[in-house]
Figure 1 (cartoon, rainbow, N blue to C red):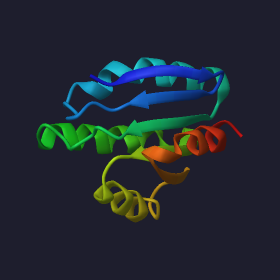
Figure 2: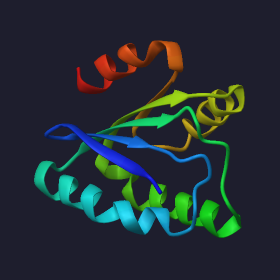
Figure 3: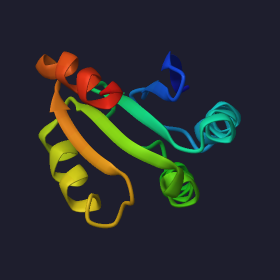
Length: 118
């Protein structure tokens, strides 16, 4: 299950589990949609330091669909990466995403937070 924490009015911290499940995005959508309704655009701090992938292809497809439908309403995304492959993936998808996306190592979490709220 994806954990979440409101950092400020338009900034949400999402803590990814070790494996994303197909149902995970249906559970967080209401809170994200509510923040978007209130503020127009939001910022996300995603802690993916424990994330190791998707449970199955349905989980990956739901994740991609969630990103596709919400990306225009997200200003910035800071990702705390725990693996080298996450840095590579973020670099690759950055080309296709509307929001500005930056990856940070676990040791630079305070910089990620500073950038996302600044």
